[in-house]
Image 1 (tube, rainbow, N blue to C red):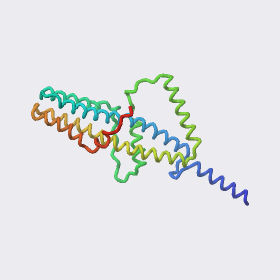
Image 2: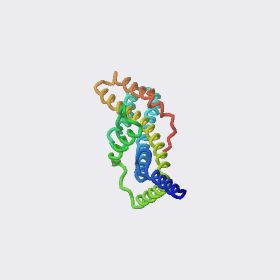
Image 3: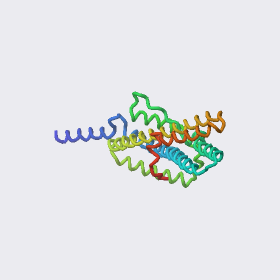
Image 4: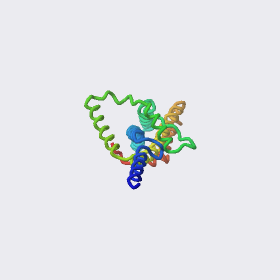
Length: 225
């Protein structure tokens, strides 16, 4: 009976290792891990672009205060705002993230966002060389080998951490994305006005972003690029 009990325990352990609390097999949790990693890299890129554009806008605005000529500064304000809102025309640079539904869990929302980002091709990447493709294939193989050496429970724990990290990044990115979209709409609406009162309107647009909580939360971050 002792050997039988040990055999049963081994079988039970094998079954546990084939699935997770979410009902996924080891292959499925590895696939999820890869999806989360790839989307995180893509989102990091868009987030850094959006953050850098807004930080540079504030720097340019501060520098423009040295320009005493109102007409010259008015032109500078228009140019610096255009530099930001042009990102709106590059659909591959700033991807649109859906809103989280009221009853939607964090994992469900993150995976839905992943699906949307996976469908958005980054057309500005260009063609990859054979050497680059080979390097990426080697790196992926190493990642898969690392995951295959882990248990499903360990991979799922890593996926949970990646999901939570990606969720926080999605929230921060969406905040900046909305600021840029609103800036574009407000800038275009202001075109109906002559230089006065448009000049103070443009200044207020920039200052509104400067004091917006979504911008203030990230403006102090050190650029890793």
